[in-house]
Amino acid sequence: MNSELNRFVETIPAVADAAAGRVTFWVNPKRVSGGEKQITAVTPAMIEDARARLERFAPYIAKVFPETQAAGGLIESELAGIPAIRDFLNEHYSAGVQGSLMLKKDSDLPIAGSIKARGGIYEVLKHAETLAIEAGMLTEQDDYSILAEPRFLEFFGRHTVQVGSTGNLGMSIGIMSAKLGFRVIVHMSADAKQWKKDLLRSRGVEVIEYASDYCAAVEQGRKNSDLDPMSYFVDDENSTDLFMGYSVAGKRLANQLKEQNITVDADHPLFVYLPCGIGGAPGGVAYGLKVEFGDNVHCFFTEPTQACCMLLGMATGLQDGVCVQDFGISGKTEADGLAVGRPSAFVGRVVEPLVSGIATIQDNTLYDLMRGLLDSEKTFIEPSSCAAFAALIQPEVLHKYLEDNGLTDKAANITHIAWATGGRMVPEETREHYLHMGL
Ligand SMILES: *Cc1c(COP(=O)(O)O)cnc(C)c1O
Image (cartoon, rainbow, N blue to C red; front, side, top):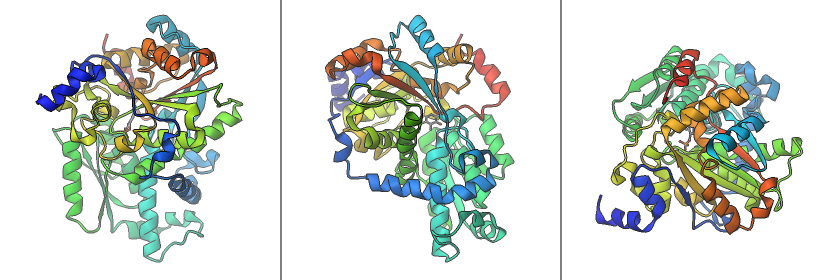
């Protein structure tokens, strides 16, 4: 490790823990009251623009993905109470969770079965809309279900969409792009699971496999795409569109909480835990939530110990200037959705004033929690998703956070939401296999 990085290891305990591969929980010293209002790279108007776009597409989505018809073509998931896993966490991890614990089941999102069905699908839709409007084939006033007509399939078929992925992003981009008629190429890193590659190929997606990690797959995908003027590259390392697609979740969750008569205010804080890979999904959701709830929502990111790139990027302030390998950790994790060694180039900077902290978790614990959730709640989510519990099982840090923020006497009023980010598409035999992992 070079001396500059060593200085961070010596001065920031969470960085020292991270570099040693230990579980840790970093609390963000740069978070400020009203932090979301300081952000200029994205704005509430951009969230509204994304929300309105998804609404325009709803008739098309309902038509081509009948599973979304009940929700009127909106891609949304359930918010469910999970009291039994709260008892499990308190019993097995002495978590001492007070208040209520809920699961935001993006693990069951239609079409792609992961949180990527928010940002990934949104970016593809936006690109398709832009192309069709530029070609004079579509106006914003049209009923977008016309996009299912053969002339559009033919039109989009002259265009290519490419993306680099550890799996789930490729699934959402691949499935949506193929449905619209695009030619799609997904560049999959070594972490990607075989069943995801198989599923994409079965939908007509071209999958290129790499023996190397995520960053290399992205780099090659970007290079390929840049050589082809008819190709569009979904750039997970820099994309504002992905971020905005995720951010729409803020208002949707606010509506769900209202429907369930759950109050969020200064006396009833909301704590949200978001598994983090490159940062786009948790960053976008956290921004959307902050715009809705301001200081009454506290957003925590969670990462595997071996791929805690956002923690290292934010705690050092070096952002995408560092990768986990610079600190001597591997970047290898069973949590394929989170197997990212270098954070997004822009998310860490954007969310700096609003993220409460980042907690890490060991792979074996992910499997234990997966089984715990299955036993106690009869709910399956993929191991990556189980990272959502990383902060709750480090109660000392959380208690200190409550104390420092004058929330100790409100602990029993907190609504905790673990954001389950993936799971529905995992095949039965892979689920069986997971049941025996890490024992
Ligand atoms: C992609 C993903 C995340 C995190 O999203 P990023 O934008 O990479 O931070 C979390 N969980 C699962 C299951 C994912 O696929």
